[in-house]
Image 1 (spheres, rainbow, N blue to C red):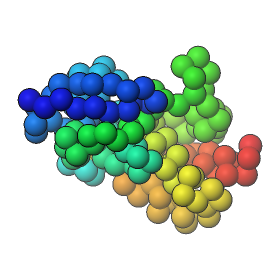
Image 2 (image 1 turned 135 degrees about the vertical axis):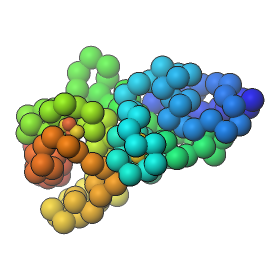
Image 3 (image 1 turned 180 degrees about the vertical axis):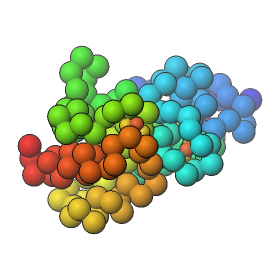
Image 4 (image 1 turned 30 degrees about the vertical axis):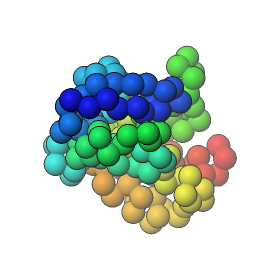
Length: 153
Ligand code: FES
Ligand code: FES
């Protein structure tokens, strides 16, 4: 077992986990942050996407021990707990959330993209999200929400 010191959604946390624990498991099963979803567990679907020091990563293939001392952001860190943030609101307004299973990962990937490229083209949005699959929306509403965000809507 190892003791991990992480900054999760702005809060310092210390959590004990097996040396081989995956970040997704630590978040979901030890910190009870169930926003990041478990899907393929092989880095193909993106529904487990969270941010580590700002970078979007697939939590199902990242060892939690590699995140020692790092800042982790999950979908629970969006908004203030009572109100959605602007990107979440735009996802809803554009119909980018249907079954919702991909949503937390899409949001985290989109936020990482928008931070490094605040005004992406449609092609850049598609490329930025190419590690995230959605079975419901056909992607267009997700891309529209992200482009609306970049226009300041
Ligand atoms: S569950 Fe991690 S990429 Fe699919
Ligand atoms: S909204 Fe269902 S998988 Fe994307």
